[in-house]
Amino acid sequence: MGQDSVFIVPSEHLDGLEGFEDAGWVGPQLWEDPDNDKAHWITVIIPQEMENNHSEEDIMQYMPQNVRTQRAIVSASAMHNLGMVCISLPVPVSTASTTAILARAEADVYKWLKFIRAGIVTLDWKVIFGRQSWAIEP
Image 1 (cartoon, rainbow, N blue to C red):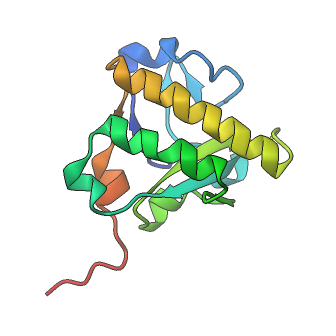
Image 2 (tube, rainbow, N blue to C red; image 1 turned 90 degrees about the vertical axis):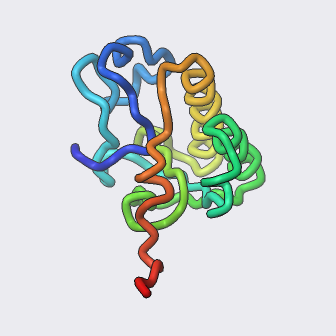
């Protein structure tokens, strides 16, 4: 374990993340993204302009439609750690079919949205928007 997550979860809230009981990377002592081989990764590319014009809630609401219409990328790596402007969600490897993986990802987006609305979780803007590998220094 040790990848950066797109979510910031204060330690006092780690016990209260209902709905992620089957995800080994969520627990009372820990919140990190799992290693790539421990999860399927569902990635939604986030338009760069959303950084300055949209709230965390807006960004999370952008995701379900992209997952539902299969405009999400299912991969073996968390793409937000590779310099893409995106949110990659881990889904336990026990989820077998692509349809089940996407359904789980969509359900998880709504769970995260609930936690954001409740003020329990925030997005890590530096992880989502701050690592563009294609940025060229003047």
